[in-house]
Image 1 (cartoon, helix red, strand yellow):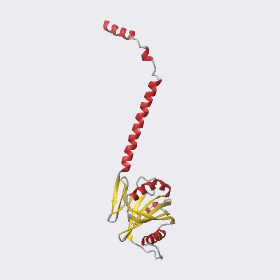
Image 2 (image 1 turned 90 degrees about the vertical axis):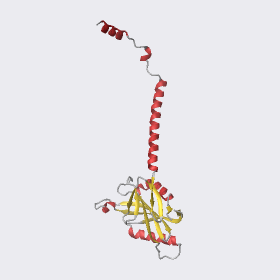
Image 3 (image 1 turned 30 degrees about the vertical axis):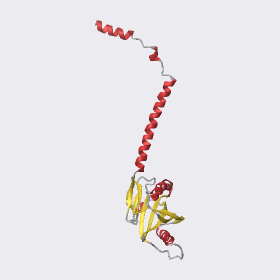
Image 4 (image 1 turned 120 degrees about the vertical axis):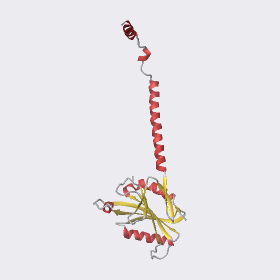
Amino acid sequence: MEQVQSTFGNLVNDQVTAGELTPPTTRALRLSNLLVLATVAVALLLGLALRAAVESRTSQYADTLVRFKYPARWIVAQDEDGNPAVRNPNSASKLFNDRVVVTHTAVPSSGLPGGSPLAEAATAWTLSRSASLDTFRNLATTDGLTVAGQPAIRMDYVYVADPAANLGRPGVPIVVRGSDYVLITGDQLTVLTGQANSASWDEFEPSFTRIMNSASTAQ
């Protein structure tokens, strides 16, 4: 009993010093806030670095004529004509994924007079696009380019597609924007095509440019 009373007395007699009741100084609060902000900044930087590392990883497409690097998160696919393609399943447009298509065909002739074999082939290719794509509109043609170490011509265009119809269900047609790089590899016409929903083309174009800059001939 005496021990309990002694303990109680010690608790009652304990005094809290003035320093323990003093609130943190302005300097201490500032340092604490800076520490929190620094911790958050470091976490954000680490997150951005990890994201950049993941997004910068690439895979390689290669066939007997051409190869290029594409984002590793993209998947291998085919276009409507069975040509090999790589597409971004995380595209801004879920209805029409961003994609790069590879087409190899015999070098066509436009039947028009004049022009180099490449220019004539590019004209014939554009005519075939016009005939096969709904409401095709040629926006621009740029020559004097080099792709995969070969002279190339680029055609920019738009057309109307109905992706939902290909899945057997009704849907709303969309405007697709595309760019075809036409070059001659060996005795074949090679066309490297970038296509995306026109509404998200600006987001897709930087990736397409990097892909084209990585292209090389497989010979």
